[in-house]
Image 1 (cartoon, rainbow, N blue to C red):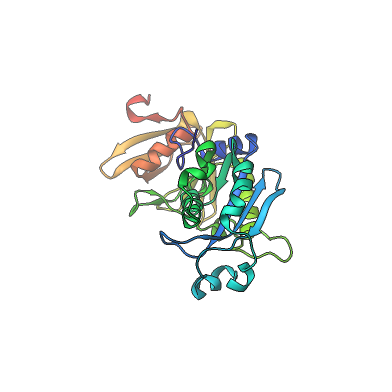
Image 2: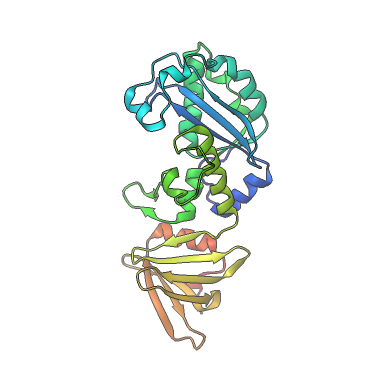
Length: 283
């Protein structure tokens, strides 16, 4: 079983709750670059409690370029006596087999696992990813943040350092090292598991729902700090020439607001609030 980015039937906080309930592992790698021949030069795996199962430098088959060293700080001198990837692979496979394996940018980290195996003369099938339940924290967080990227026709991606902005790392740690990034990813999972999902409209209205309460829409307008709660039977969707309009009324059924939303936001809203009526269903 795998989780390809964010399954359409699941909300981000539900995914995070499920991954933690599955006693997931969190993986992060630091590498020699981004390309098709790049290799891992550091790897870390934490369990769902934050305990370290593996945290080691890795000696790649190639030199680490200076511009990459400037990002993560791992030098060629630091890795010269580290174990090679093929020496670590049996331990990696033993740890991850049969587990839900979360990485912040899952496709990238998994590709680098396979590329590092290839650089050592192994095949991609020698990495036990086929025996894991894979999960991408970045895709889940992108849905959780709720900002739509029109150019990509998908939720906006967020760098880990931005998604976890303000979180203090343990003393002596820095971003862009494998253990630190695992720590931030696990924090993000816990944050999403205990928070609501949200949608941000072009007019900077944030629409959220409380966990366990799909019948109350919470509206917050960041620029003006305006806030209101609307019960589901006082909100509805109707189609417009530019997409959809989310309408909300007060307890006397006087119209409070009309927010223009796009089709993807309409889909996300109806996932968050299954009882939200479309115009043809409204009374």
